[in-house]
Image (cartoon, rainbow over all chains, first blue to last red; front, side, top):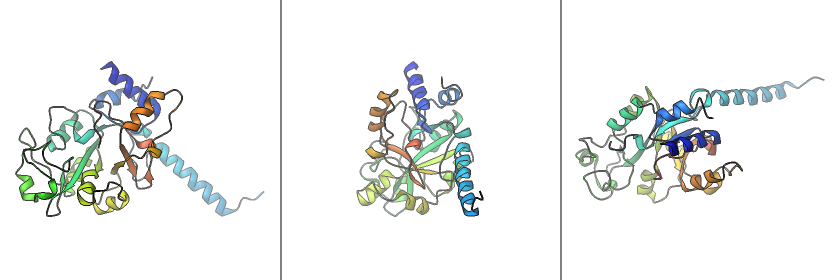
Length: 35
Length: 220
């Protein structure tokens, strides 16, 4: 789970508009707190 | 100094595009609130046990928070469009062989798991889904079965399938469309190169819209 978080965080920093993920709630939570 | 009117018009138009981009309002390009990143359900599926590209999977993905559902289209022998990823039936259904060898009636008899059937893409499903989320449409198997090529003009495909402005089309990523690596993210480039999906817009390929599956390495 931590690895997923780190990868999503990295992609958000990178600036992609969409992330293919099985953890949508994680993306929605992290996009407001990218750091 | 007096600025010519036509120059003011051009400057105004450019500013408007920038404002729209910041707000995520450019037609054909999907984006989350205030341009933020969106979770996409790959093949409409976020729960591993659910059969991909099914109505059951779409509903669950939306329920769990997916803001975009990616679906894949294939063509039947009689020219109908169904929602299925592979160009063959073997992996995801109880049928065998190429999808293009089966009529719509025959495809509707197949089981894709958990009692689900192959959904038909007739426009209504996109309308239904878009009441709740954006839809991204993949055409790889459709074109692969039809022409054995994956580099068809996707903008024409958008028109053919009457995708509305909230939809986009998944095409193939070519090496030159992948963003160059940033010094602080040397690892991302190799992963992005391995992933061949790209969300393209009516304006053509836009690397900023590329997403990378955070769980599976499968393509398309």
